[in-house]
Length: 324
Image (cartoon, rainbow, N blue to C red):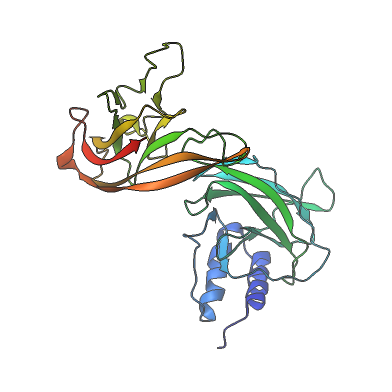
């Protein structure tokens, strides 16, 4: 059997949408792809992962038609990096049998899902709704979400676009969404890949420490002033999962000159036999009235349960950052 073109494949999948329930959509679409000898994919590595949707490689088929027409989705315009279960909803004209969704400029294809039930509030319209996860491959910043409705023949209507902004997991005071807002002068970060409770420890040139048990260093010249450094969050505390798996020590202003040492310690394994970690730093840049962030990896490693420390030591040394 010859390989179908992207447009033909899209039409075949859309015919399946009309016959299938939401639960059967994925199986029907995968069956069509495999029957034609085209490797199937679930889009696991895509920047946007749509629950109960089917992923297709390549561009979606376009027709230049005026219908089906689709509205921009109702969704928060500011979403957190790596957010799980973000809900998108809206309406599409009732000649649509399916909805396509993608992030413009990111990923290798688009997601397809049923158009939904008739909308009681809008005549001649169907309601669509879906949940999606933002994956790590979608960076912080402004992005264009694109949606399109497909008719029974697999022909697309006009594309609807909506601007969303993904905020950074690294504390940046909202700079990723508004470059005129200054980020912190310096952020030292620790990230890891398991449910374990890791702690970052930063040792100042003076010997002062910021860590989970001591989350800030006060300004010695003004006790009422904001702290020189602060730990933003104690992630996965006592194995309570927060989906971030990172800790950040934030310096809103450039700290005193000297070398700042970064350590990682395993406070609780939380069932993990080992955990991979990495450290990085981010420093503020400025050009005119706009600001940016320069980042650098500082290295990492693996901690095992044999290195369980529970706050008794500084932990495993990672790197030093010199402020001058």
